[in-house]
Length: 276
Figure 1: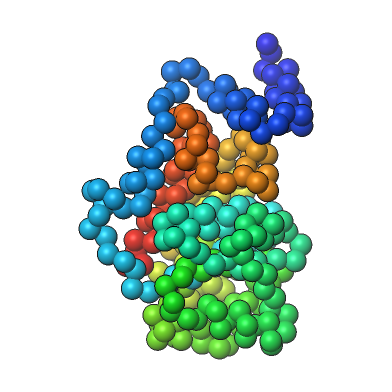
Figure 2: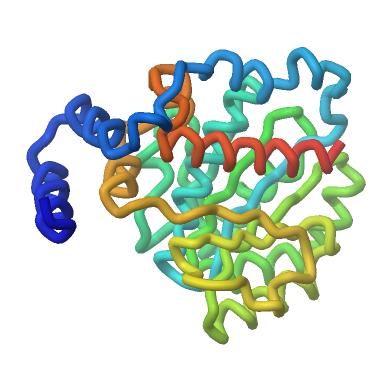
């Protein structure tokens, strides 16, 4: 079948296939020689630092992850979803905050783990900061909507959040999703002026940056996230999709989606390890 007809057929199937049939379509799109046995349990054991990684001690500080960008539609909530699921798998629990007005909301994907928050008044700001600054061992994830970017970082600069976090044994980490425009460049400079270098991780998202990450964003650690085919992206955008559950139940660990999730989870684990 010609390639353009195959693509049209797959797009049509995305609209009409139930989830299990769609999973079979994703699996069938792989060459036969790439299909392998299910090693999901083994992978999760490694991810949880069992066996060869059992020497890792518990984290002494409470991590607070802030996923942000001053630009819309850069995959920020997708990253917040993955990170929240990873932290729940790795640490047993996580508390996420959805500070979004116009983008798809984290609370829609992970309602049991997520609270909504607003920073458009003093009460909302205090309520959020009171939960972020406490060293209770419960990892926090903030999905910061792009309209709130400037207000949020002006707030943490004004209240001395970084110094208070250090005093309280809280470890803030900002995952900045880069784009190639001037707004992103200015936002990145705002972060560099507000936070210590080791508190910033640049996300090089191939969904957004179709090429090399601009050097202006390379002053800090970089985590790269590969692009996926459009029909797989549509699949993981379903509100009921779980990254961890996919790892546990998918019988073929060689699928592109399985490897993509594993790569990102290992990336998150490396960020965690550097906080110890």
